[in-house]
Image (cartoon, rainbow, N blue to C red; front, side, top):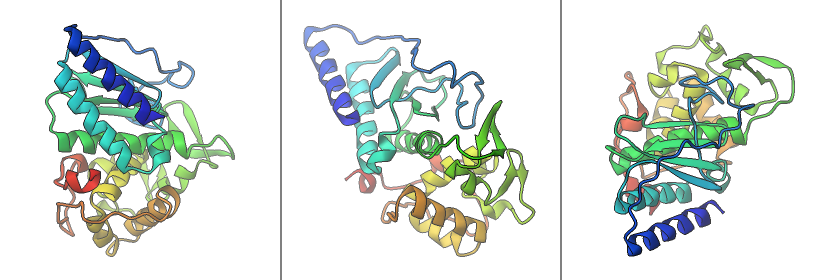
Length: 270
C-alpha cells in the first residue's frame, strides 16, 4: 500500500526524467485536517507545526533533481520496510522537503514531514524513525476512551484510555512535571526530557537503533527499564533489535539528540 505508492511515485519521476521535464514542485500540502491540527506547536501529539506524512500520498516541497528525490525515497522506503508493518502504515501522508533551512523533521497523527536536503542518509533515516515514533504514539495507539488524563497536547486533552499515557506516567505527572523519583538517567537523551511526547519518540528511536545500549542502561534505572519493557511488549510486540547499535552509551551521561548518534544503517535495512 504505502510501498506501492512510493514505487509508483519513483516510476513517475523516472518517466519525467526521460522526457526531460524538470522536477520542481512547490506545494502547500493541504493534507492536514483542520479539526485535528488547530493548535500547532513544535512538539506534542498532534501539534508538530506543519506535519505531513506519507502512506497514501507523497508531496515534494522545494526544488530538487530527480536523482536527489530518488535517493531520499530509497532511504525512506528502506526504513519503512525495516519497521513493523503497522508502524509504517501509520504514516499516511509524507512530505519530502528540499530546503536546507527547513526543520529536519516533523510528525504527528498520521503525518510526517522530513527534510532531504543537507543531511546524511544515516541522519535522515534516524530522524524519520523518530518522527514515525510520533505517529505510532499519536496515530496508532491513540484513543479517545476513558477520562481526561493529566496530559494535554496544546488545547487537546489526552484520555486515560490512550495506551501512551501508561508510557508517559513512567517519568511524568503532567506535560511539564516529573515524578519525584525521575532523574536525568530516566531518559535516553536530553531531548527526551523536554516533554512526554519527545520522551516517547526518542525512546522509540533508541529502541530500534540502539537496542544494546538501551538494554544496558535499563539495568541501572527502573524507569528506563519500564520504558524498554513497554516498547517491547506493547509497541513492538516482543521484537527486539541487535547488531545495529554503533554507539557504546556511557552509563552516566546522555546525548542531547539521539538522532545524531552513530549506528549501522546497512544492518537496519539489509
